[in-house]
Image (cartoon, rainbow, N blue to C red; front, top):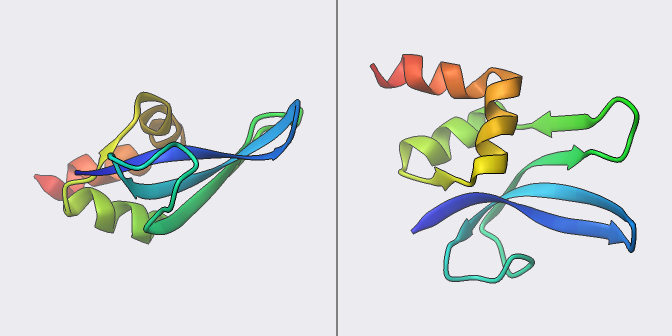
Amino acid sequence: MLKLRLKRMGAPKKPFYRIVAIDDACRRNGRYIDKIGLYDPTKTNPLLEIDEAKVLDFLKQGAIPTETVKNLLQNSGIWKKYHESAK
């Protein structure tokens, strides 16, 4: 099963995350299929970059986002676009 989840990167106590499409049997920082975004919560204005086309493509293929990724997609408006296009 395909999942959209965060992959932790960065130095100790200075994390940033890649949003990746990955098989759910792989480890958190294991081999991923495709990088679809970047999230850095450590900045005063958190950085969020998401490739909307890739995300929508993976969601249409049946990928399931984790709760955190789902919240990030909702905040960026991509989750709403996905549900509008699915109707």
